Amino acid sequence: AQKITQTQPGMFVQEKEAVTLDCTYDTSDQSYGLFWYKQPSSGEMIFLIYQGSYDEQNATEGRYSLNFQKARKSANLVISASQLGDSAMYFCAMREGPQAGGTSYGKLTFGQGTILTVHP
Amino acid sequence: EAQVTQNPRYLITVTGKKLTVTCSQNMNHEYMSWYRQDPGLGLRQIYYSMNVEVTDKGDVPEGYKVSRKEKRNFPLILESPSPNQTSLYFCASSLWTGDETQYFGPGTRLLVL
Image 1: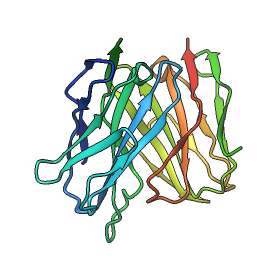
Image 2: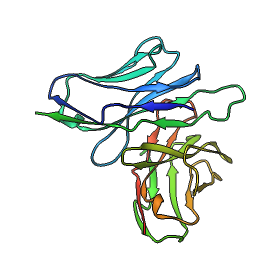
Image 3: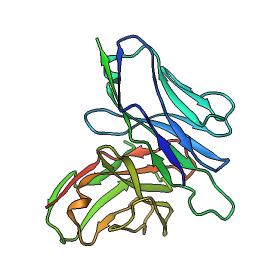
Image 4: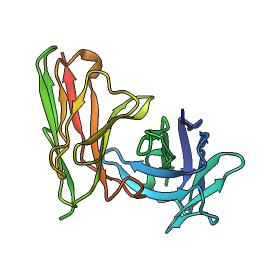
């Protein structure tokens, strides 16, 4: 069974500084996808960034980058130049990849989340 | 506008009274999924569907039913709700099962008394 662990219940960062949110995962699959989502206080879920297990380069989307270390099974989110609007809950998630004969393709597992607070 | 809609957004009900939360997407997505969000537990997948008439259990399917008779709709049914099903529920969809982007609905807050 796959598992996602976010060990930081809360993080604080000064505006304009960079922050790293940790995510480790556990899976026996060779093919999988890793995601980060943002949930502001308004409650909606916003997709931020995706990394495939076979992607050789770390994913980047604007101020977001994913520090993917496959051997260590970590997929940390790096937010550069933090803004006040980045204050939110952040979730790491993993989707199992297709497997021959497998039935769990399509399952998505989320971590417990990290609350990020950006101070002015 | 491309979106995932859920109804109702808020619902208070009593134990045992059957209810349905609707989910609809207008993006012709193949993959749809239901999650519940509880404090300290993150989001947990209830059921997902890779296409019409194809559904499968997520991590917490007990007490829930789903159906996928049309591509755009994926209702979540609670046949006999109990207080431990009080939660925030999200529906999500993506173009196909392996698509990297999931679009989430606005959420449904359910309170079962």
